[in-house]
Image (cartoon, rainbow, N blue to C red):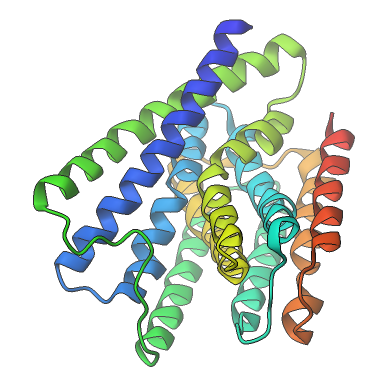
Length: 308
């Protein structure tokens, strides 16, 4: 058990480090090549911060732990809203006025509903995976087209003075750390699940999901500390869309993902409900205050208690 816990811890550390290095290197390389920062943010950064989820899900699917692969995405989306936004709001509160994310929220809800609809077939296979990836392409096209009409902003993590050597080190380091971390995390989590008699679906929905969300959590909490809680909100909405369409799309193309009955009857609906909680704040401009953040955190604690 101790060895398995060490594997999980080492995997989480490598995922966080690798995700940070990959995003940093990719952003600076793209800017060095003259790509608009906002487009980089919508593509390279979105992919980079979701790389831990992608690698963990693909690794789990290839090793037969398909419950972890699917639970990782469903659990991450729930954790993104209840933990990441909850913690960010609890630190400084999150303002929603002046930051129109209504269209993005609608896309997040539509992606969640699409996932649930596909899950009713009992398996998210290659055909369903290609459907998710097709929707992803449409979403990215819309976001990029919209962004071109707006004034681009500097992407966080960009260092105009970065040399080619530094960029190469960041990219190579990230590309090495991510797959190694994903392998260690899945291996340790699977062994723990078997030893404790806990289903792999529950491990994926909790430990693995929260672990792979650490890069987003670190970025969001840092934004809240700097009184930019609105950035945390955009980060969560964008990440949830990408997790469903890209992560599950790619993973299910690699290996079909059977949907466990428990996930179909409970966890997917918790994910949808947590996303729905954001509607009044985004559409009516209501700030997400510290007490609301506390309620979000308590809600996630209750969810984990029910799972365990």
